[in-house]
Image (cartoon, rainbow, N blue to C red; front, side, top):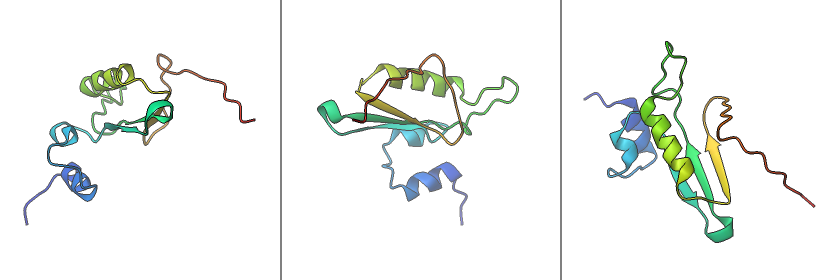
Length: 102
């Protein structure tokens, strides 16, 4: 049996295509566009464990920060969801909209 990195095992489990950018970088982060028009949603998933730097007290490496910045600036959607396995607070991107449920 040959060694297979955990990232590859996980991406195989998800049936992630061999051509996926997620297979060529350190970390499992990625984004998805769902729906169309006014009902379009962008789901951004970050991976704070893959590039953890305890000395700098940073959970995202420079590569992932640059990717996240690009993701937040491109493909604008009416609604964006940022998902992670830990609690985060990013003042620079945090926007609170009032939503009426009535």
